[in-house]
Image: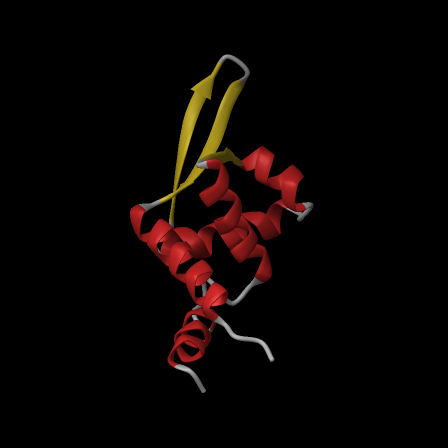
Length: 102
């Protein structure tokens, strides 16, 4: 087994990367920078409770930050990657790109 595959498997065994929904959240945040809870909810088509649980796991791992802001339309929950989160997602992308397929 290649070193890259070992690293990828190790990353995927972490709680934060063990769910395709959480990987999707991380990739969306990397691409868009930040998103509201409502935007993530619409994008991922998950129940509110499931999305909240996924966000809690990612926040506990230090990969995202969650903050409440007040807007003209009312309060919003804004989610964005932390520096650690960006590093982990970029590592994930890098390791996937390095995989060689026969």
